[in-house]
Length: 609
Figure 1 (cartoon, rainbow, N blue to C red):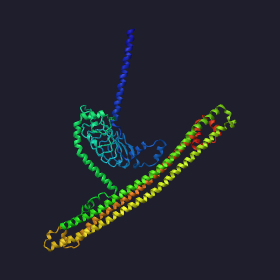
Figure 2 (figure 1 turned 90 degrees about the horizontal axis):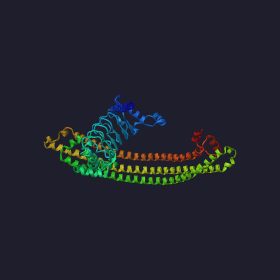
Figure 3 (figure 1 turned 90 degrees about the vertical axis):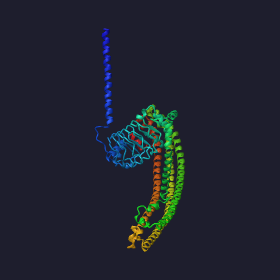
Figure 4 (figure 1 turned 120 degrees about the vertical axis):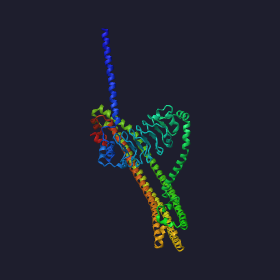
């Protein structure tokens, strides 16, 4: 019998074991199928094409829910207003049609079938881009995304880090689970001064134990703080320095000249931006003069006579340079004046706002002091009323015994109502006065900026007038010189020395004046265009600046009014709710509230009903 029992127990154990193994195998099979399905990324789904319909659907699905979502769906979706969108698991094969999202800041195209980075150049406001789990083989076409902060290529087919060193604002970069098999390219990340987090896990280079990747990036990228989302420690940087000293020295030597060149280009770019803000870009040298003779066949024909024409052109160049230098200096001077005026305006506005903020904070503190003092008192009174109501159901027959408590509630109510109304009116009055003073300041600032802009335009126009006169004088002198040259060559029997474009002048006296007129028309058009550009840009800037200031103040004022209203109303509702919170039943509530003449607001009354 003992043997039989042992056999039965053994059989049961074997059965349980096989059942357990079968469950594990089944679970693994299901997981395998699930992973296979995930890797195929909706294999049964048709290839996705980015269109207005796809974008609109994604925006609606990712937008507000409930009643807010229903109301949002009633309005037409304005794609240019969208700042965040996720187009994931859409089987997208190609990046396209995203140019309609002009103000997009966050874009996720993860879990698709994209094999090439393209058509993103118009998304210049993009700050976060997720291209994880696609089929991308090369990092490219990201040059225009200069505002990008977060970038992910996780789970693609990229073999090398490249074309990233111009993304100077990049903070987080993830390129894990790719096929990166070379350290070349990582050194280019040294130029990304804001880079703080890097992930290159699950790449071939991460499996080379002779060159620990974590130590390599620790010493190579001093600005980096996290690798694989784990803080880099000082001892890791020291270990990296010991192991990769030679590699680091080679990289430092190679990038030395590039650093100098990048500094030069950065300065040029900064100067260009500075001059652009002064509206006198390309006016600090001979750029305007040289542009006059580009694509100018008439001028080229007249200048072909040689030294006399070249001398006239040189004199014109010197005069034009002096005039453009005057415009350039006027632009810089006026820019500095405008900046001082803007700084003064901002300082005055900030002072007014801080003053109003201090006054408002004092009012709020006083209101909160009263509120925090009254609330415990009201809780205590209502609790006592509530307890007495349960102990003495016939209290409604003896209302005189409750008069002291009710009187205290009335006093508390009156005090709260008084401080509430005083606070509301005072805060609104402070905000109204601030808004009026700001409006007055904005008006004065607008007049000042427009006057300065007009002054700048008038001074620049005076120089452009002189430039046109110089052009006319040059043209007249050139016509005279060319006519003398042609006449002299013909009279001396050297007609063959006359340029072919001018030989017709021997038979037609209008050829030279016509050539001069064609040259002058082209030059005048270019001069006029540069003047118009200066005028339109400066006036547009002044208008846009004043509009922005006005709109900003209007938004601030509306937000402040809502803030005051919400803050006070929230505390008012909380104060009135104290009565209901401490009265347990509807019957007691009615009985006590009939003794206490509180003005419950409409929302509380609706909830009670």
